[in-house]
Length: 395
Ligand SMILES: Cc1cc2nc3c(=O)[nH]c(=O)nc-3n(C[C@H](O)[C@H](O)[C@H](O)COP(=O)(O)OP(=O)(O)OC[C@H]3O[C@@H](n4cnc5c(N)ncnc54)[C@H](O)[C@@H]3O)c2cc1C
Image (cartoon, rainbow, N blue to C red; front, side):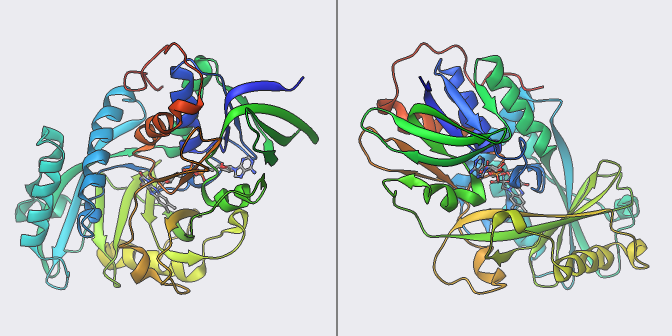
């Protein structure tokens, strides 16, 4: 007889493992199917920040920023080896669109949304300290603000959450590719390919946490579930040799978008770009014009890099964004103000058999997972919780 679980989760990215951890903490049986490796998708190609998202204030996403800052505080406590508070510097030049008063207002609001916690305090960096800022160009520099946000190793965080789930009994099959499912009256039948063999299991609820593959997974389910319209937005990062000693820089690129320049494993990580992607998520690659844009932005602010440096690594990840139907090829202006809220979609309101996660952030994975469990409560058996994800240490 096929093995039976309370939940089967498709996808071993941060959302899939987060759901597995939340389910296992509730005392439920859960299995994760991952086709390549834990964090093999977007969850190893992010900007690696556990942050409130200062730029989301510009599009009025205040509740998202508040939630992110709350989760940041929590992750700093439960994962101190994986999530580290870092100084962020925002230089403002005579040519920068964002004016000092606007940034000051934004940072005050950021601090307010973060409950005025000391970690949300910010300051104006005095002119006599600008020379310490890792070779930042001071020509035309009018002001520098410093605030705090956190950096992580996204893939390591994802693996740590999976380990935490496994310690509470969650199962993991990897590499295991979900091939199809039949939604039944009491149980769903799920088929997947593991070690070249088709295997079957049953689950009360199926959770689609396939990230950019979300629609591909839905197309393999019978009866065909409804799908939300989405767009995939590609974001590229590059790693160049170099050293930043002070922290992370948040600079305005020539198209007015904000780009991070940060220390990363003894080198410098620069990102990101935003362009609409159409194609198989497995084929996403950094594009030459994205790499050129990131190099140009780095060199513009850090003259020491104008002579050119080799690129050690370039990676591209895909965001899932709800579509507003106006995206054009390379349509960055329409995507960077779009909502970054996570959408949870059920196949039916009462007793759902399938829940699909669209979009989301690394920072809020735990909250998203708790919300998934709350939405599925009446479809799952009563169980005795063994832990609370708020207190589970991640190492
Ligand atoms: C460029 C970029 C920068 C970002 N920066 C940040 C940041 O700094 N901070 C932040 O909070 N958020 C950030 N985000 C958002 C965050 O990274 C993502 O929301 C998050 O990683 C998505 O995780 P996921 O689990 O939904 O998807 P993924 O990590 O893509 O996981 C989906 C998994 O499903 C698996 N899968 C797919 N199909 C199947 C199948 N048929 N069978 C089995 N497995 C399957 C895939 O192999 C993959 O591992 C960024 C996103 C991007 C694109």
